[in-house]
Image (cartoon, rainbow over all chains, first blue to last red; front, side, top):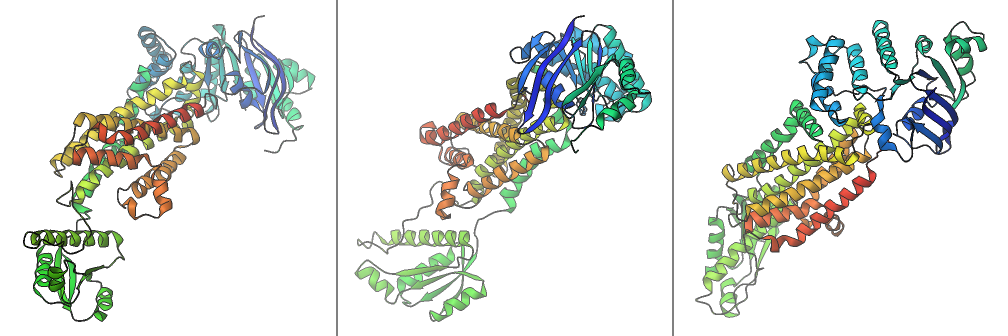
Length: 245
Length: 364
């Protein structure tokens, strides 16, 4: 299997605080990789390092086959990123947002035009075309943000808690979109708080206090920890935490 | 980059608060300073203690009282009354003539008179004394042909360049400076901080767009808008306030562009040290706006300040820009006259640019 992300002995410290303590894992091409952990476990730090927003203290990291220290520019062209915070501009319309992000990723005018038409059709945005993004319902905003994050057809998409605060129906639709992208051969790296979402992932890693405590398929994890659901697995592991939130 | 600039313009034009700061405030300020907030003195009440009561003391008193700046409130009989009359608060200045004023003037060429001003308002006092001295000096000159001797000993005060003593001429350069500072520095710092606060900055940094492209994309719209702003103020002050446009307009415009550029780099620097719009706004307010108003010589004359504040005023870029604008607009100076101030602003610009490029975080 082809490797999309490989992390070897990754350490990130902030002063005396160890956010990521010697992480080792690989993410395969085309898989949906769930990156779980309680608040403060070090998920966001790890995802920021993978996206090039932060430098690791030590360790080797390769994203899409490129070195995180030397080939940042190449990595940037090949990844998409959707953060916890809503990332579209509220005071621009849907079209203007797509135009802007398409533009900074270097898409041609024709490509941007066809993408815009495609998104408006697929997400059923016809009635919102002229309104500012601020006026859109949250669910639609999140779906649009995801579409924009993959506008340049990246090899790997990093999603940092993309569904927080979204209603169950929209979450389901959102995961359908994730599956659709994965089926196109894109690798999805997703962090989440919802354990039912963890069940949708191909493989899941669970982080506790900066350390990866478990990494396997959801089925296998449930077997190992003799648990009924991913929620039980997670609670068993998270209890070990000594960090105070 | 082009997409970035277009996006930035759209956001500015859609945000009515930005538009008010950009165009509403400047126009309001110019009109306010021009019409309402005038420091011009008219009809200040004075009293005279004339110990001589002779020809020249009377003539001089008359001359002063007949000017539009002063009203002769009363004559005093003794020096004891001076304290009381100031305490009443109406009379702002007292003139004292020595006994035998005319005689001394004609014989020895030296006659003493004293100007006592109520300095509880130092600016007014300063101005009153200057006006009075000027009138006395004028009187002295009118005596000269008939009197070959040196006249009364009086400080040499002349009203150059602003002969009409209009404070509007003093205010316009200050207002231009403050507005350019406010619009350029505050607006850029807020707009970058907003991207950080909303999380869009992360997305930009993850994308292939380069940090310098983000900075340039932010700077160009504000550079343009600030310059348009400058032109509006200039036109307003010329047509509405009757401000003279003495010097080379091209020079004035290039100097303004330089100053705007300085303010923009300062704004970017502020945004690199603040993570939210509020921090950026407060920093701009306290670190930029207040010192600009208080220490640049715009309202309070620098020469009246304590030494330490004079020192501090030397690191206010706005102080130098006010000098440049005044020199060009009122005196019609050329580049050779203001090269030193220009150089200082240029150095400030380079300094802040270097600092912000160094501090602008590619990694959050």
